[in-house]
Image (cartoon, rainbow, N blue to C red; front, side):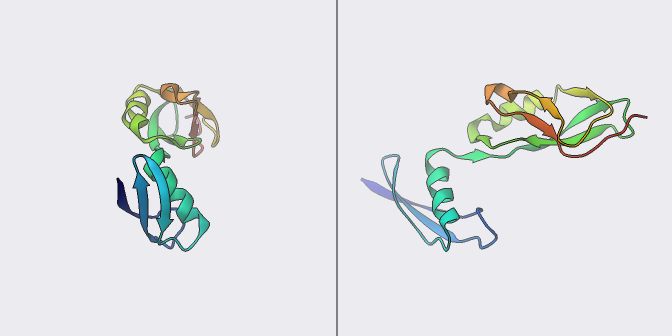
Length: 122
């Protein structure tokens, strides 16, 4: 038995309205996309949804108290809360440079957390 899932694509600025036809958990067809990224997004969102996580972590002895961070790659959507909880426990020492690895293999996802800005020491 097939069903259709309606999505708004976030693969590019067009924001196409997608219709993803599924049979069980298999994608049969994606329609409504104006570019290939829409098809890829529709398939991925229905079979293995992932997200980039952005947050902050505390900085000790820095000119500011926190640094913005993000996952280096996307992670499984069902790991988001585990990743955020793990980041709440992280403290780094200044200085921090943009691109520094803050946490390796966060929540056993195989993905690193990296700094997205510089924080100088006091």
